[in-house]
Image (cartoon, rainbow, N blue to C red; front, side, top):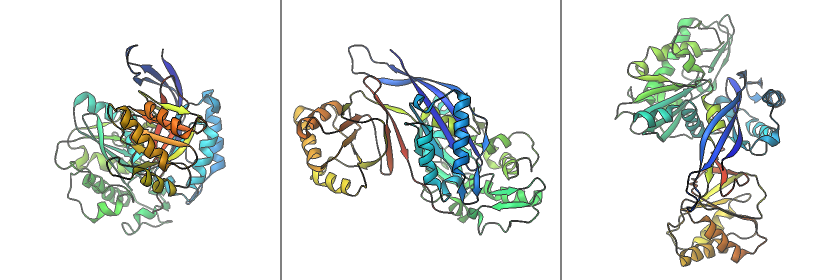
Length: 458
């Protein structure tokens, strides 16, 4: 019997804010005599909002009340109540993630949008969602080609390297169409701090089309370096987003790549536009990309461009835990539980768990490899180590191997029937990841793995 989830995706970007509502169909693909194997079998977009300019109070702060009003109006247009929402993601991206009140705005919007709409930010997550939403991941899987996807927005360009339909690396550049803002007559009203030392354009000057092209050619050279099409120099390092992997991504200069584009600038790559149409560098940057090495060989513009990230957030952020799961006294949903990755091969796991959890401000989710096809003694030994290290409070465990139910039962026997215990399997968490968990769907539990790293640079 299929289950249906209502999912919301909300993307608050440097230039634009937009929302989608989608329907996710969950099916058990295992036979009636097998361990359940639940997958997301179908994704259907029910509603797409118009593309709104992101409301700002000034260059440093977002307008939280205006964002709240925008979301409430879009929910009304979609015929959606917050209690109707099962899963999804709020993604705050690009230069908006560097605004002074970004964290506070995220919390307010997540609470407004629904109990299981998650607050998420981070360039690597955005890269993954944009590649999925633009169809680049599916294109690589279908054709067998290695794809470098570039989602070029207002403030950043998010890169994802995809081989045989699998995203194997991601990175981010401070390259986007709205690093410089202009009036309809070409007067400069804003210059992003990331361009400090790279251009002498100043607020108040009248920018010519040729001066705009100079800046855009420089930004395009950085994209070429990131794609392995030009020898990297200090420009690439200067524009690589802080806290993200160094560029170019490994392997980009060693194999034939198909370039793929999404984001608002992707709409300006093909076809001529007035260079002042949007009051920024977007049309000029798109034209420079079209004339560059990035488009000399095979390239594609995504099936979705400006909506790629929001579609990725609304349709592709959720996954399922289970084959087996164990839940005892858990008040769903859980939100923003930090991952505590631990190895099992070293001695003193209980003491290491105790030290790791003591460093958390609240509960953490223990991320362990687990054991394939474990015996009774292996499950018991792992449960004893965990029970010795967790102290008081709820116990959250994520395992890569299928043993969550057996481990949960063993933990309950040691910690008692009143202790909140949640054990999930087939979920891999890494350092810096956070977990959101929704209420069970039959024998499986929807989860979202995400990052909440907000850059303070720039």
